[in-house]
Length: 122
Image (cartoon, rainbow, N blue to C red; front, side, top):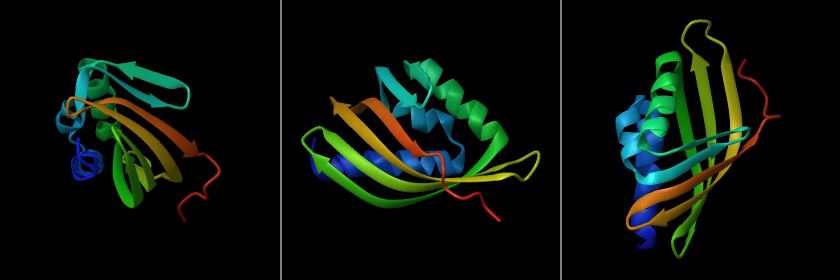
C-alpha cells in the first residue's frame, strides 16, 4: 500500500466514527482484523461492527487528526477524540495514539493507546 492509501483509510475510519457509521468502519478491516483499545479486543468484522454500532447508538463523536506517520504497511496516528453521551450530555476527551497495521488493502490490526488523564469537557 502507498502512504496515501494508508492515510485515506485512517481518514475514512475517522469519518465513520464521526458519522456513527459502523458498517463503513468495519468494512475497513480484514475479515480477521483486530480492534484493540485498553482492556478490550474485538476480532472479526461482526464484532468490530457491533462495538462501533453500540457506541454510535449512545455517543456523538468529534475527531481531530493531528498527524499520521506511515512506514511500510503501518501507520501511527495521533488524534484528539471527543465524545458526548446522548442520554446525559456527559462529554469525554482524550488524546489518542493509534498503531494501524495494513494487509491487502485492509486494516489487520488497530491498537489504541488512549491518554485517560485528558481533561473533561466543560
